[in-house]
Length: 149
Image (cartoon, rainbow, N blue to C red; front, side, top):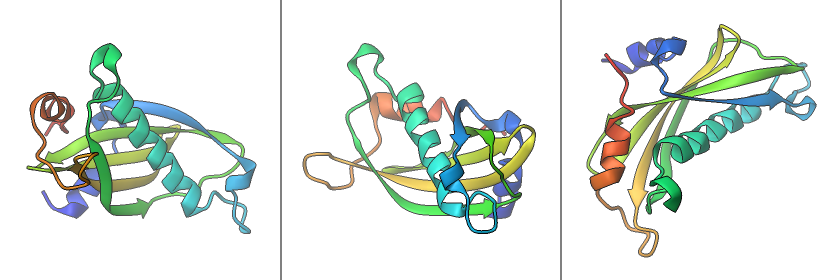
């Protein structure tokens, strides 16, 4: 599947495995009166944090011990977003590699897809700060959240 195909698929609400909501703040507006790209990118980050808490948890013990570093963020803006309002952020896994995984995300206002993103994240050892393989429960959690073809 090409990157264009993936970005098109990410405009479909049905592909996402986790959802979270956020409010559009007045401070998110730019001089043109619509929500600026920095605020939309913050919605994506909120979605990634929610995904990690919802899908990469070890039960009562918290998040699976691993560090994560975003190494690539690609976003397509599809529609304007205004104030006031609420958005929903969907997140799904697109690919799982040896030490990295790719998230697909969408920001929606109602049925309208505002923006989509692909985010490549590398797993690192928190102590050494070096890349480490994705294994065990972490791999299971990511693979159980893969986009269904």
